[in-house]
Image (cartoon, rainbow, N blue to C red; front, side, top):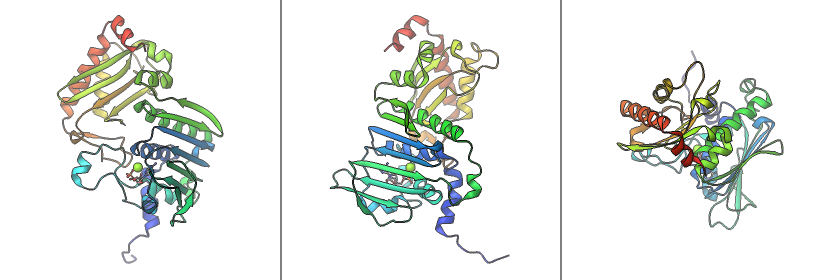
Length: 335
Ligand code: ADP
Ligand code: MG
């Protein structure tokens, strides 16, 4: 066996990219979350060929200082946490400092950014890490091109353009549903496919899930023991053949969690029969110290400190909301 040696930095990043950057949609998720963490009010996403050829995101957030630009592309470099206490109370979507490094190791990556108050913008690429002057309003543009151009084995796992676009569209909707206060636009191959103006939650849900969903749902808003569950849960009339209309967020983060799924299924058990699936957009808000989001790089898995209490809370809260008489619920969901 050869002697033990340290792996080169770029290979380390490419290995990590296997977890963070599964496909264009995972790149999109990371970049949208970065834009939100930067306090953006408007986020524009432009994709070409399902996001494989190009994925460009433009935001009006706080931007990145000239001297931080190269660092943003390095692994374990983040502006979001500095200590274990910060990690336990994390309020941003990102904190691992991995995404940009991983993305830049498997795609041509260009960051142009103008920090708040800066005289002009600066640009770095994955190859040219010395910032060069550029023109841009305050905010950031990140362009990711030719995903997996240098890792052909990975590239083979990419699906058709329309399948990859479909995954990107899912991610876009998922992120947009959680932030009705932010405007979003998605375009593919030069055509705008979804434009969402900043507004309130009911409007955002209607624009993303449609009038039919809104006409057949109950408003959920329960609060107890430090937990809050809010959002919209469809009645059986709107049940689906698949799980595509299931959106559950913990502290603003879209998650797929067995415990939560079980609580939701139980709440629907008496009213929903057969092989059909409920539809909902629900937000669980709680003290961040009670939930560990650092389980997997993609952060769609979480671990709750008080799992039983949360199961009970979600089950009872939703059961009660679904049993609310039609009149009051439809009144409160009408904008
Ligand atoms: P993380 O989000 O976990 O910190 P990333 O690799 O995604 O790690 O990003 C690294 C750093 O780059 C962030 O901590 C942030 O400071 C900066 N950054 C990335 N995208 C943006 C953006 N759109 N606007 C402002 N800063 C950004
Ligand atoms: Mg990030």
